[in-house]
Length: 294
Image 1 (tube, rainbow, N blue to C red):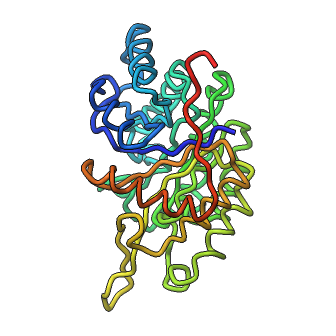
Image 2: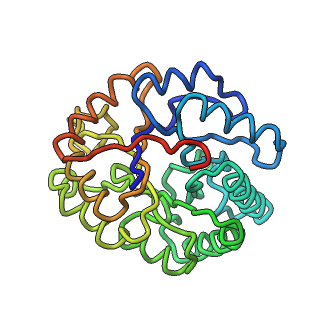
């Protein structure tokens, strides 16, 4: 096994700007893997890749999931924009292979011009679902060639908005490269789900455990409002049963990275300590990164 606890968003900015001091600081906080944010996967050199890998090895960190900034255009009505997003994701697959990252992130997108994680009435239509399937198939053709995984994230506002819909998506694309990035907070759509999370979480493991490539860890709370409203919270301040989630993750994906995300940079040091309370309760033993060349 090589189950690593890490962070997404711990270092801001493009991968080419990551400093050795920032990487060392993340390691000192207890993280063993970090995600990699890429603004342009077509503009780098062999030397850039080697320098980046050396920095991570020097810090004692493993390179984690790669995340490309292509927005929501995989489902865009504008074919020029959609083709650009598909090429971006294909280029991400190639860079991910060169970096030795375990997977690259697929953002399903939205028709909302305000952003990829914003609702739109057509996001749940068959037309948009089929378009996303087509985009993913084109990206997976390159992923299959490069031998890398694509981890799809979803959410209640997206074209893939539930465990069942995500399973339908993975099945429709039909590529061994395509899988799921577990991030249950994104999918909570009702008070019934929010207040009874274990069966809600279990459906994701039952339907998608065999294609789970990784996970993001965060928390949420129901806000005191007349209309149903959820907000993200720091780990330990919300409703997610993290110990249960981690135990189920280890059953279905014992080698997957778990990345804490969506908190200010100065809160990551405290967040990992809080998260380890839950992992200790679940009996999770975190591994150390593999030495270079292992």
